[in-house]
Each structure stands twice: as structure tokens, then as C-alpha cells.
Image 1 (cartoon, rainbow, N blue to C red):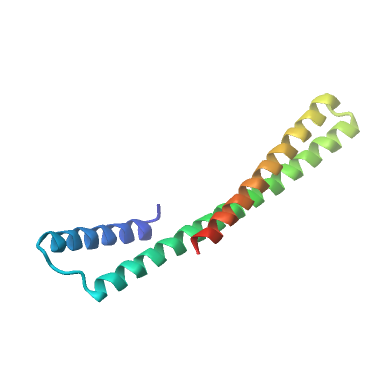
Image 2 (cartoon, helix red, strand yellow):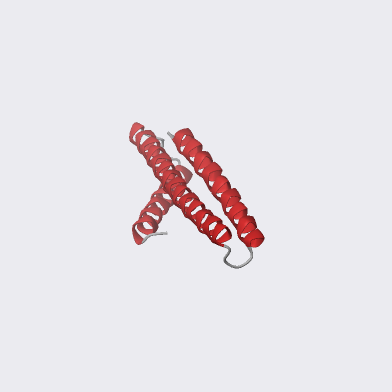
Length: 116
């Protein structure tokens, strides 16, 4: 968690503690309270969507790295370097990992859309 996020969370925690204390004292809920709560909820959804998009981007990058690694193993197998069967098996493992990363990226993008 970044320092900015920690500060924001601490500020929000103080707001909630203060609001809870006001409610315990019997103070009414005002339109400003409702507006602020709605704003904070919207901000939280925006941050969650951004986090999911960032995760999706990282999964996509990881998938590309796995695809590149698979090609290196393919080239090594074709060139007869080391054990060709092991290189082909490693290439297949990298391709499966790339597929898993792409699926995870798609899931994160869906979650980002759900937040908005």
C-alpha cells in the first residue's frame, strides 16, 4: 500500500470514527453526510477498478514473457541444444502459463467493469 493510500485510509477511518460517535450521540444524518458517503463509495469503486486494470496489465505482460520463453525453448529444441523433449515440454508449460495469465487478465478486466 502506498503512503498516499495509507494516508487516505487513515483519514477515512477518522471520518468514520467521528461519524459513528456523532450517531451514538443521537445526531441526525444530514444530506451532507449522505453526499459524502456516496462520494467515498464512488471513490472506492474507482480505486478498485484501477487496481483491477493494473493487475490485468501485469498479467498481460507476464503472458507475453511466457510466450517469449516458449519460443526460446522451441528454438533450442529445433537447434538440438540440450534435451529437445525437455525443451518442448518447457515450451508447453510456458504456453499454459501464458494462457492462465491471459485468463486472469480477462477476469480482472471484468472485475474492473463491475466496479464502475
